[in-house]
Length: 318
Image 1 (cartoon, rainbow, N blue to C red):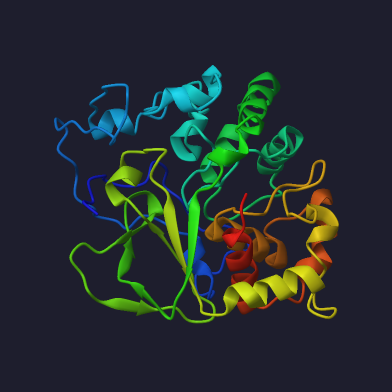
Image 2 (tube, rainbow, N blue to C red):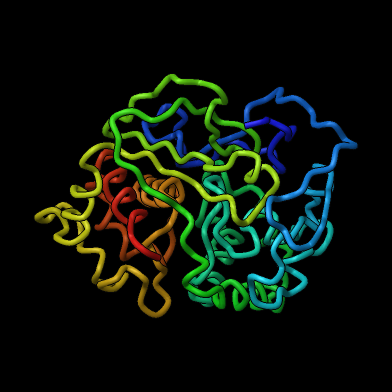
């Protein structure tokens, strides 16, 4: 990882329901301070792009015009997704990328029900979704028009299933040495042969192609190093409810965990995102009428349960 970017796009602060000392706090990443500034004149290009674009990092991080390196690989993109609207509605693809898969610090929204996406933006607006990662979403949700929101939601809903696979899950006792870097993403430490233990409450979601992630390349996916045995444990909990500890996920999310009606897909989604959601529901940071059905699901889950569930669900085909 070349550490070419200066910092994350938005300054993020702790919010209600988030405890910095929590064992799952790694799933709420914030870019370190003091990262080196990139050369403002150096141009970069994503591998294999047909566009011929060569951009500086200032251009790559343009909140109202980030790069679309592979414009032939997705449906026609509405203006709010591609460019946003100054000064508060950033381009949706800045963080979620053109196919909606996003990075670990954001969310995978490709293929989700349009009505669900709209409901979640309303939740950000109304203060029923809070944590240290939501500042930018709250700002956007308070300014975006309903017409813009519908356009964005319809676009991300239209992303085909074969473009939604983004995470490769690997069970291991030790992960390659990695660290939090630009944007709050995790990167492999270049040249290191050291490893980091993957304990029962730990997942390392790491850029497979660090430079590609920094370029906002929609081909640059992620590896998730999860605890040994976590997938089987998560499957047992998801399919049985843990003998009364929780509730079978298929009741609301479907037998393939791809969602039913306005209930979202959870198969193949990023583990860090799913950890945040389950932990936020458990703590009350995510609340409101739409969360009433999840209360009994999460109330008795331990941190280890949450890790096991997310490891299993992330390992499934989206």
